Length: 312
Image 1: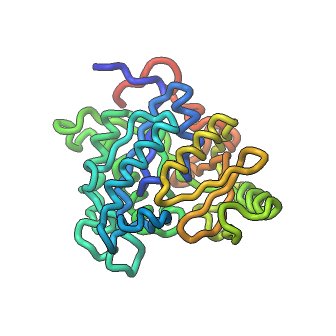
Image 2 (image 1 turned 180 degrees about the horizontal axis):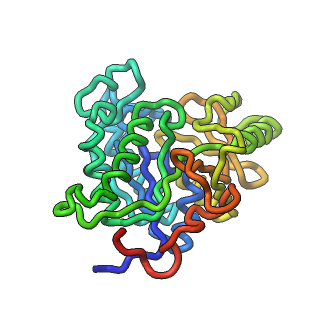
Image 3 (image 1 turned 45 degrees about the vertical axis):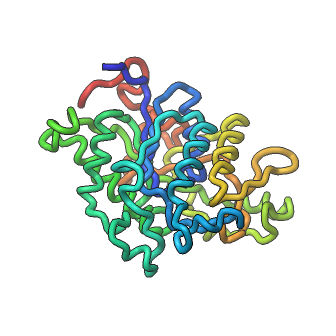
């Protein structure tokens, strides 16, 4: 059996592009440091709105070809971040993008929101037991901003963490149990977001003239609620921007005239600051090992330095 790298980080995201917007700096940093960074994406993002007019035919209400196209975008983004291990939950297309609440897509058979949580979690259990991550990152119970697929990704990830550690759960199929050492939920420190918008206003906008507002940023929390902070240097900032740019159907990225940090817009055409510091909360109010905010997601974890940790 091939020995695993000493540090192993798994991220569970709903759609292609979520990982780059939310965790691009974190993924680039740990990949560059030699950690195993594994991304699990739950859907192909088939219901996303298409920004480039030349690709409008891919939309769900036309050719419905956006999902396969976004697989290619995600592959490109992973190259930019230096991440070699990417997987789709249950395989590509197993679960379809659910759209927003109240839309026909959310009622569609096979959409992720309608999936049985335990059944979907069973696929993630297999990934967890193979990769054996010490750290897993996903969304908070509201999915950051209430999107059905983000909420479901949270539910599936948290259930899979529980089941993966259970010695009575499918060991004959999925292998030895593994207990994830620490689960983080993505968030954004209010002060960092406010500073980003202030910078954006001072620079005169971004890719589109009208700025978004702080309410448009998922997962904003008071600074006191932040348990871990990952700051990106020039290399990580550039990697994140390039990864976001790879998701060209969903994101427009504009570099700052004076260099990083830059800005971006989604299909709503509202400019947002491209944040090069990423924030995390410990799941379920767990206490940090030391004085938060931590500067390393692995801080204090047994087995996160030196030889790979065995079954637990």
